[in-house]
Image (cartoon, rainbow, N blue to C red; front, side, top):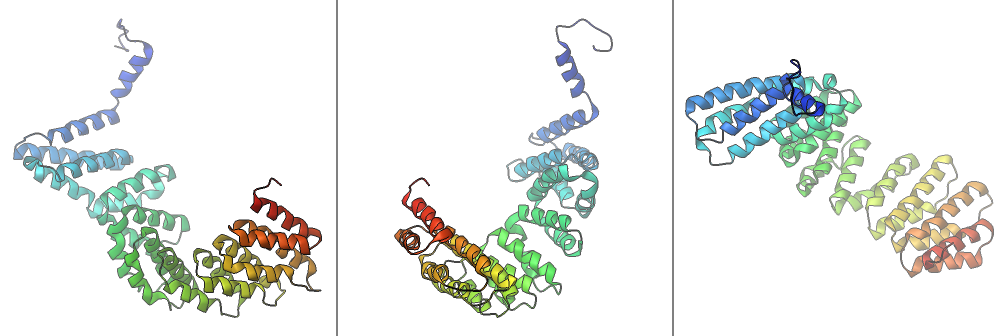
Length: 364
């Protein structure tokens, strides 16, 4: 019609829409839709074989063109038929589903991640999440061997999309000799959010690498394992402030009163180096995030302490501590702020007045 300039009641936009529907890729999609619909009919075995062969060609075509949305649609449709009553198409459905689990299909998907580009990652991740178990081991293999960080994150996100089906394969690899592999596996277990992970993680509390230990305790805190608080208390006894810093930040996920009191003790410990000051600042922030009233006596001791050394850095930390009182609900924090306002002077008194007004709900 468009080429012959035939008179028509269609406007130009409608003609353009019709032309678009006749391009090759759209026709392949439509043909695929017809084949999938036919599988829902009462078909003969021979017809099913023909449909399966055509679907295999279409899957390879969509895979070659990077049309992962169409591939996901095919898999979803076949999965519904697999669980349905259409016994006449069972063989064709099974044969086609097997393509998605094949080594060739999986390798083409994973090997082509760079060529398809980042804008395709969401569609690829969705498809992998739908296919599920067949992708788990190849993804974990890629994760163990990959040196580029963004690809490791991509593989981990794909495994996360698969979910609980990946649990067993992850646990089997926790004895890997490479600490960075174990660390990533522990992160995956945490993101699966399955309390069953606490059992295999118990053997990693004493792992030789601190970054693995860090992720183990973080995961145990996330999953509400009481052993995590005991580990925190043990690690907070270490004399090295640089090691303690990471543990202090982890402690924000705890609500154990003993952990709170130990952090308050560290806040009031001597030490004026840059590392010590950074540790004390992290403690103040962690205690504010925990917002447990057991921290208030230690905060009061720190704010009201007197020292002739490191006056300016200490004043900055004390102002941080005063401001942090706004995170504590309840009358205890309001009482402490009012006391500091009354008994202090200068910047401390002004900061305490501001927090006191905030806790009373008075606009500052």
